Amino acid sequence: MKAEKLDRRIQFRRAALVDDGFAEVETWSDHGSPVWAARADLSDGERWRAAEVAAGVTTRFTVRWSAFAAAINPKDRLVCEGREFDITGIKEPPETRRQWIEITAAARID
Image 1 (spheres, rainbow, N blue to C red):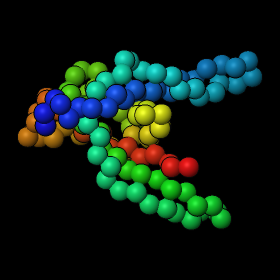
Image 2 (image 1 turned 90 degrees about the vertical axis):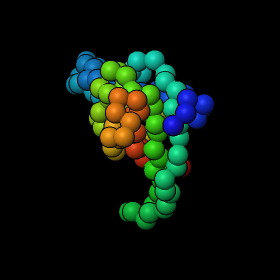
Image 3 (image 1 turned 135 degrees about the vertical axis):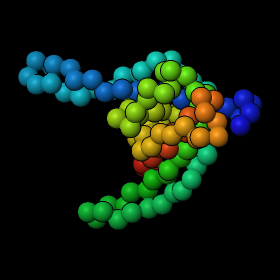
Image 4 (image 1 turned 120 degrees about the horizontal axis):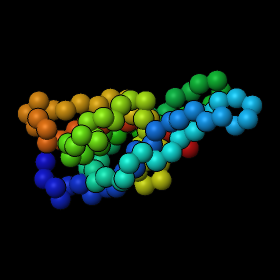
């Protein structure tokens, strides 16, 4: 992959438990600085569940390898162009060892 294909800015988000005075609640905040990424939509679809139609998209983001990017995990989320994605998979392709990281993520389209 060439650097000019990294044409999207993504922001990773990480959850933290915060005491609101009554209980601990999960809040999401930005984790690190935004990074450049390539984006490729893999699939989209609609599902019926509990009398509700939910549309979603599965997307693969490719980012440059870094210690920060290598520490991202499926418990994190990412935001691209205002849409929040749940991370479903992370891999380092064997042919590009320590060059690129591929992140598969899913988002609802509502």
